[in-house]
Amino acid sequence: MERVEELDTLVSLGVPLVQGYLLARPAPPWTGIEFELAHRLTARQVAAEKTVLRDVVEPAPAVLSMSQALEVFTEDPGLGSAVLIDADLRPISLLTPDAAAFGVVSQGMRANLDTPLGVALDRSMTRETTDRFEPLLVTDNAGRFAGIARMERMITAVTATET
Image (cartoon, rainbow, N blue to C red; front, side):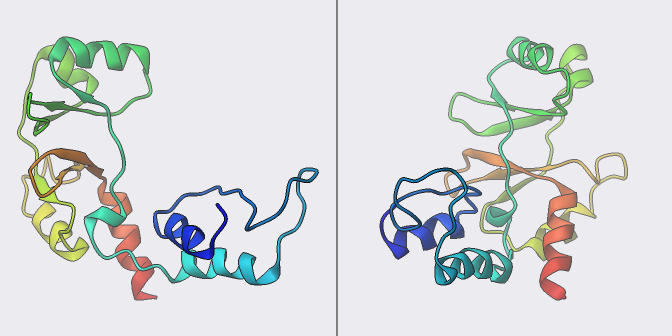
């Protein structure tokens, strides 16, 4: 990264680590950067309001079959969920390790990347009690799987913008 505009873009995307000539020339580790650039990094992160699902979406493994889901869960025993998608990359179901093992498919709730967080939370709370706190299946404008939005991240983002 060599320009301030590139730094602004990376910060707005939430990239946690950056490097480049804008910050410092090649040098030994942990050299300081100019105050203005350091302030630009931290001020933008603190001031950035999270208002839509796009701001809190996180990746989740996407699988095309139950057998592939079982493989993913076997490879990563700590994985809490994967998403079953169709050939057009549209989400079919949120899978847990148990659901994949028993072949249980539930639709889950879908929401667009640009859905306001408050609306997504309101919709989530209308679900059955047993499913209420499951992550949302987030899609792009074409209905393709974009990631999941966990209730914890949505609530944290909404309460952080209110203070």
